[in-house]
Image 1 (spheres, rainbow, N blue to C red):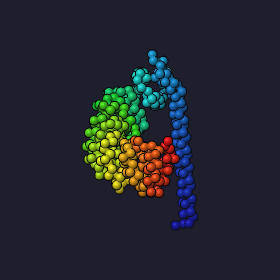
Image 2: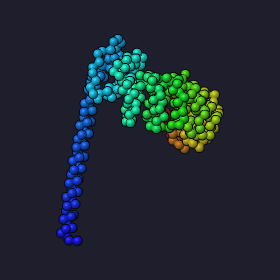
Image 3: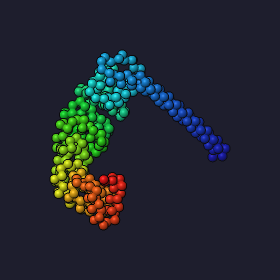
Image 4: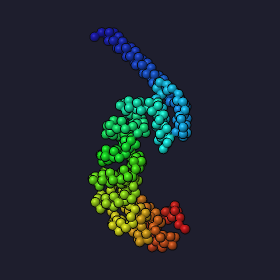
Length: 354
């Protein structure tokens, strides 16, 4: 091969490559500019909605009577209006909800929500679900049930919340099935959802579910039940301790929601559990339920090898029914473990007695 020919070929290839790279760079810059322009336009749309509609919707929510005249919606503003409307609905109760719903129907938010419910964009789908839930729209029941079993945890959770808003009693069986299978729903939000459903509606379905589940799935639900109905939570926790007393996760969770002091004698053996989480929960349970008869056991736990167990035991000692400054001094005088003494000193500095 001629050297000059080979050299020319390499130069030409390099030149073509440089041209291609320049074209690609120009295209990327154009795409970036287009995206930037689009985002700026969307932000302007959102700002217009906030400026015009937030005070108007707030006025509708707080002022009885005929709603004010509603301005025309510009193209592309509807999703941002729905966001504002949902945010306000989240904070409202009673007649304010009714007035906001009337305005939503007047604006056609229900029809838009039904369309967005089928969007492949998760954010738009969730926005539609929230809207239909706040509207208590019964015709959306089937579509929301389909979203309840979505593989996306947020879509599924918001569908559960919407179904509860529409008909909590009817929604419970499907939600209980999802609770049994899912570990991805946010616990705090789920507890609030069950509280919103009402104790009368949620109490027995949750109780039946918890007593039927394997121990590995029960522990996260114990606190939820206690938040819905503290007394029932305590009763179920007592039964769970008798059924699954060898499962550390169940025991640690159940001990924290007990309300009946009479069960304490059945629990003292957990002071010897190899699981620190169980010993820590026992200390807290004794503090919540115990009296001076539990002093010796707490003094033992204050010498535990795990810092958190010692800390909870010292806190519990101060909380015992009938405990006072003289009782604390008497306990201090009998303590010989330096770790226990240090922890009592630490907790007394946080929570002085007398």
